[in-house]
Image 1 (cartoon, rainbow, N blue to C red):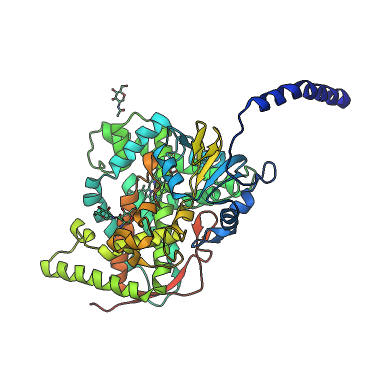
Image 2: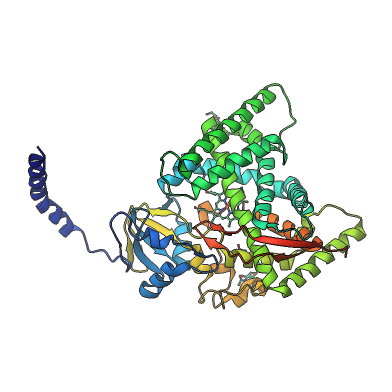
Length: 480
Ligand code: HEM
Ligand SMILES: *[C@@H]1O[C@H](CO)[C@@H](O)[C@H](O)[C@H]1NC(C)=O
Ligand SMILES: *[C@@H]1O[C@H](CO)[C@@H](O)[C@H](O)[C@H]1NC(C)=O
Ligand SMILES: *[C@@H]1O[C@H](CO)[C@@H](O)[C@H](O)[C@H]1NC(C)=O
């Protein structure tokens, strides 16, 4: 039985061989970038994903760039891949989204975030969802509703901090960004039973996103798929409630994303669910890590803390004199040094390390061939930590952003700075993220002195995370 199968198999191989050879001969010789493909199936994924400090690019990238240059081939996530640490190629990839390249996240991510997740969908569906997200985070929204919410939620978290008490800064930052997102998306208020239940399900969900995609009983991935279901049920209930209210003519809950989408789009309920889940994910994990990174970098740079404090005291003083209480958009615009700190934090900390793309055409770039169907990974961190783009890239130096970056190397800092990606998938929440970080810093720096309570360090898993949660202690500053 097995013998005859083997014979059959051998026979077909012998028959097929000339055909395979013929096809191979016919193909023009490709000039692929240098590199190794590693073992079949696993390829080099394990080395590529090995944890390393967030302010470095890790041994794998270092060794490969040293040996092969900034563009090399490899085999990652089960597919042949081109890895790019080249700022020009990264920009080329972003600017040709949908034409030459397409977003292509591994199946495991799609399975968790959902097939209609914004990070996964392409083409018209992506265009429609992106329009919703951009509309929701429009300038007008940012300047009015969001600015107020950001300040309120920052104060809520900061005011709960106890003097001389060790706690996780990362947890606090997550609380801030989570509360803010669920308020804007679903009109949930912090610490209500609903918000707490959602937060709990979401935490389980996140553990699965960062775990190995093994759908077996008891694994984090399986639990995440279950909590995805819990969250979806929750959002579904909210949608029904909302539809009832809309029918009943209730105009009360008009300004959250859920109501807006229900009224202004033709998305199916499953699509709405995935959209909300992806916004919660994209808008909560990233900016909380960015805030944690700022709290981690700043104590090592007292001069920056000092200059921040001066800047924010000046803004606070002017407001007191004018009898103003809440921060305005003009106040935010005046936080000039803070913006350097924000950029420098994102450059050195690299919240999003690399993106997943694939070539949808045969592409020739700088003499190299990128075959259609191959994965292409633009590594944002490698550009930001490259000494040919930024002088002393390992140094936290907010002043390099003076004169919008002329001190950053021959080509100028902002040119090679892409923390939010680019092109047709440029982060829809970049302005909100910067606002969150700046406003949080404003109230933090005015009210508190903080120190790291234990040695901790940001690591890439590949999601940036502090193993100990960044423990800090604070002292309240007596008023200015
Ligand atoms: C420091 C914080 C943040 C960083 C570093 C960041 C970074 C990024 C990056 C690199 C992308 C591109 C993904 C790709 O091309 O595959 C992206 C997309 C996106 N981000 Fe952010 N992000 C941040 C905060 C936020 C916030 C606060 C929101 C608010 C909801 C948000 C919403 C989105 C959305 C909706 C997309 C998908 C855009 C699209 O596909 O058209 N992000 N982000
Ligand atoms: C929804 O669908 C209708 C009919 O197909 C169309 O006229 C309308 O423009 C669509 N609305 C949106 C927001 O796409
Ligand atoms: C910060 O980076 C952005 C690019 O994301 C750039 O447009 C901006 O000019 C930079 N800010 C400063 C103060 O250099
Ligand atoms: C700095 O900003 C100005 C205008 O704000 C712009 O014209 C110039 O190109 C920028 N320089 C760099 C190096 O980005």
